[in-house]
Length: 423
Image 1 (cartoon, rainbow, N blue to C red):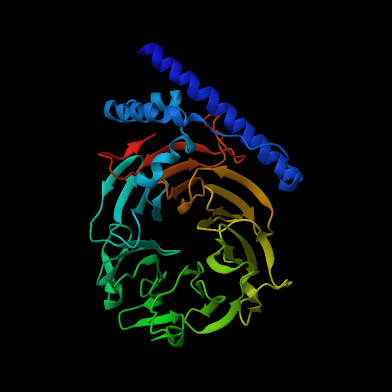
Image 2 (spheres, rainbow, N blue to C red):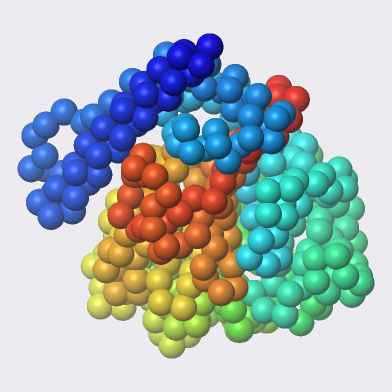
């Protein structure tokens, strides 16, 4: 048995290190010379035949609390387990930082019955099963919890209730909450749903996007529409601006009262994501085409009256990235971290300068950055939560990426598994 274990370690590590080395060499070449000049075959991770044995050992290590030794013997990987993910994978989204060691998150498809969890270090606790969405204000630590009939705001994640907004919109059939952002004041909340984007307060449920007349009561074929696709929105950190978008039409810029003040046309096909830099000096908007896309940045002092046309070169924006369909992102003091469909996160500054990339595997479904900007949490559609310590060096020779980030652990929130597995 010991001999078989040692042989498995050897096979796993030789193949894993070789694969990571070859992929990193390819990416470095592409950075310097472009994809069009890469003529070799892309390396393959062929450890799929080892995955069942490694997964069984991982389960045993969790049972016997020997995960640290297992992690040293078997640095984690994504591709060898890809064949399991259609059955076991599920999105991890709405990551909400409490502090550098503690976050809230939602696990499961937003249109089904996602479960809220608290993760403190590597200890996982189930939260109230009736919570359907969570969020946090840009400043002042206001936390929001959505239920089917109301949104509750608390001062700190487990503090006193400071506001409750009742609305029947949350119970609308097939409606899903994509994002929930309380205003810094604790008096309103931005609610992003497939049934429209709203500002909720004690006395109103205000639809701000799309316009009422964009929701067709009935088209010429007799179909009625009361939903939008690719819904996305954000608040500036000072809450002076609201930005909204969905599949059809440009990103819309509003002032803090909900009055439209500008539009930012998509430079790829469909508006898909938006976010402000942490100091509010810039807004980025992403639009996508299939699994690729384009992200542009606009100085915040230009938002009043902005009118960028779709598919048009302009001095009014800076090209931030020309490849990624952004599914999740965070902003720091100096740069953005963007997550894409292919399992990569990539850092880029406000001038579009590439800083680093890091591979996780599967579409990125959520991210959260600690206040001190040292700890990054990432959730993927593979049902895996990753905790990275930024810039302190790679933990092993299997890491794909040039950001020198250290993965403290990953947690597997897989379907049809008795326990959440730590790796």
